[in-house]
Amino acid sequence: DIQMTQSPSTLSASVGDRVTITCRASQSISIWLAWYQQKPGKAPKLLIYKASSLENGVPSRFSGSGSGTEFTLTISSLQPDDFATYYCQQYNSYSGTFGQGTKLEIK
Amino acid sequence: QLQLQESGPGLVKPSETLSLTCTVSGDSISSSSYYWAWIRQPPGKGLEWIGTIYSSGSTFYNPSLKSRVTISVDTSKNQLSLKVYSVTATDTAVYYCARPTVAGSAYDAFDIWGQGTTVTVSS
Image (cartoon, rainbow over all chains, first blue to last red; front, side, top):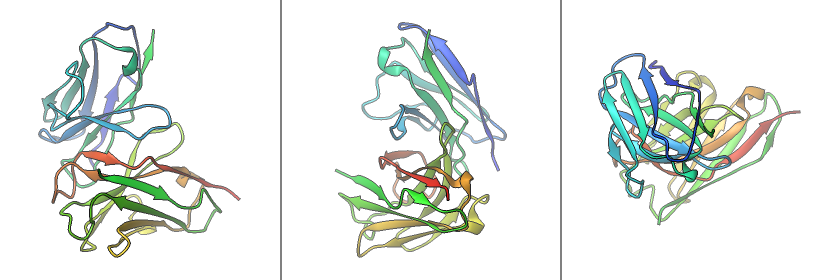
């Protein structure tokens, strides 16, 4: 099984900050990586697919990069609505493993 | 507009079978080229893919759950279902059905999700 490891687990930041979340795969997954945002009591929302493609309707302050085993999600200027938990997901293999999540908190 | 709606008992006793349904509206499972998936999230924890099914009945399961899970489709009702057998407290979770972004792709990112249904395993 492919394991996905996110870091950090928790991130404290302020409105306007630039933040980066990292996701590492235990083996190469090419570009088959997605990022989701989840708020309490809600289903995850797709932000990024194929490592760097922005889902329709997602603000351009979100961006993704990487390939192989290391990937990043960057929010260029945090907005109040961005404080949530973020998950990566690999879909190189059918098991579709998710990372353990990164909780983005207000500093 | 495509919508997914999960339903089923909110409380299941240990050792019994958890049974959930996902009703699809705005698209036809039988004529759609999409796969459909079940994903769960234990309280305060991350997401776990359970399995994926095509309208033909072809299925893929998470190896860690495969021995206890069955996913099926009822095209006449435009529904997919999930059964988890011999449940324990560790099966307590919010259960989601979801659709991948790409038609014909068994594993992909998920852009359409139901709102989720909470299942508690307790006596």
